[in-house]
Image (tube, rainbow, N blue to C red):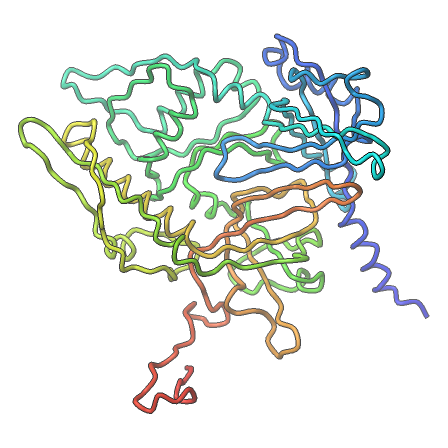
Amino acid sequence: MTDTNSQNYDSVQKLVNSCNRRIGLTRMTKNTVSEGPDALMEKAFNYLITAYVDAFTIYNSLDSAFRMADMVISDPINWRAVAPLTGHEVISIAYKNGLSASDAKEKIIHFRVHNIIEETTDPAAQAGFNRIVVKLVEFPAFQMLTSNQIYKTYPIDENNTPNLRLSQIVKDTLDNIKYFSLWYDVDIEDSVKDSIHFFVPNWIPLKVMNFCKKYAISEKKSYPMYVFHIDNDPKQDKPIAHFKPVFSFIDDVTKYRAYGSSYEDTNKESINDNQKVVYSPADVISKSSFDYFDAQRTSTFSGDTEVLFDYQDDNEYIATDYDAYLNSKYKGISPYVAYPISYGNQWSSFYRSAWNKVEGEKLISNELYNEYASNILLGGLRCKSMAAIYEGRSPGERAELIFSVVNTDMKFDEMMSGAWLTWEVNDHFIGGRAFSSITFISDSFVNINDTTNTFKKINTITDNLEPDTINQG
């Protein structure tokens, strides 16, 4: 007798672990950027090199403004004679999971060649083939964001007090990049209206972004920790350039994904009754590891603060109380932050603020707010996982992770299961294999089986000092 369920399970798993992909090569001309993505798409896959690519890895993180990739090509046909790579090429890749519907959009990313390395392999093992390693950066975002083309000074009013949002500076910067709107849509969340007298004297756009990220706080919910990040959206034709705080990604209910450690887990109901999440066989975690305590990483305050200085009031020092910040301002992924709160403000060096007193007080406060948020989130929990490639997955998604506990009566790991933020998604194509390595981060441990979302209490050891006197509530 045939087990139909087992057959269905096997067929689903085979589809999930397969990935359709195309890799094309196009020569870049002086008009490629001005012609736009539609013109590039017409010829991107006319010359396919998929069969020659041994490995292709795409790096996509909230830390990075644009995506990067490594490509390894075997060279049995002598590429220098047939199709020499000179650094003026666009490499395009299109891929989607084998389980996706036939009419689902492929994920398409264009890269430009950034570096080419030729290596000679072992003649006995590889029949004398050379190996070409190509470093790639996103096209045309790289040249748009690293070019010196922003020359703009913002006006100030009669009181010599500028009144521009940091988010408006970013928007103006992107609007002033020629052809940027032709290739990318823009998603910018307004920052609070911090007045700033801002010059851009030959600053590259990325320097403007990093400057604004340092001080920007969301106007809508006072969220800190802005990121500038480009990614594909399966619902949009063009990639989107985001300038917004990471907590805005968490609040976006359309960017929510659930993961389980087995195919059966991903078909169960949500562990959080109030959350409606989508489970997919493509989101089965095949391997995972945790980095959940690192005292060095969780104590990385910069040691710097800014000093307000003017000739009338002399020096003034601004500091934000850390405990008050945690209690009143920080909005975490989970409600209780598992992070040491005893560091306080220990400044090792000082540098002067470039603004007047009124501006400086607000912006220095914002800087500390952003620094605290970054250290708590990036210094918290990390989960590094492997899953099948899925074209709709991206950094910035809120993730519900379910980790099973084998050989026990527990349904799932109550310490590590729960809400995380997808921070990095790297897609790997190695030989015939395709998989994603994903980094999730969180700021706290949460006992999701406890309605109060807190840990079970562990009482202090009594005078007896025996281990069995530790009571768990």
